Image 1 (tube, rainbow, N blue to C red):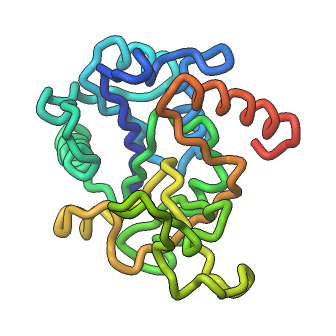
Image 2: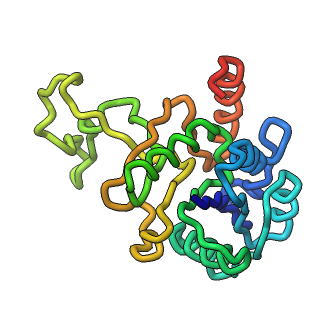
Length: 235
């Protein structure tokens, strides 16, 4: 079983300049997912970074990742989608390394909370259950079916009024993408070109390990959370 870890890290971040190589608690944030992927040992045949930036490539190589190609500009634009970047990375890697991969794990560069055990669990789920995809999720901290919206009159109303009188314990738990990793069956992905395949399975993460990092405030929050998790032995 041949597996490749593909870490996506384009240059040109606008909200947090240099986001993918910005120091996170003393070292470039991209080092965290690279180190966790490498810690999986023989699980991955290759750990690569797909980037359009030579600076990011140099930082990634210093952490032990391979840079078999530089991503073309059209796949590093603001509107480039993850599935297209992944397909290019898989096809190019198979050509360069003269091999075929059974499974690919897409990992985001700004995922410092990613754990080796969760990566391994994802591969076990996708391979033993013959699914097209497996990815990390976490639960919403509040019953999402109690969400409200503001209508065109400026008034509050429930998005799902049928749950207005339902006890919280009886409301279905809802999950969202944790933004850490996505395991893909390569043969299915090449055919369907979908990151979220039909009948996907979850790797459920505790909420404390999930932090979207899109602003300086998010960054500071993530650093505090990371230190807490590290002190408690969660990481």
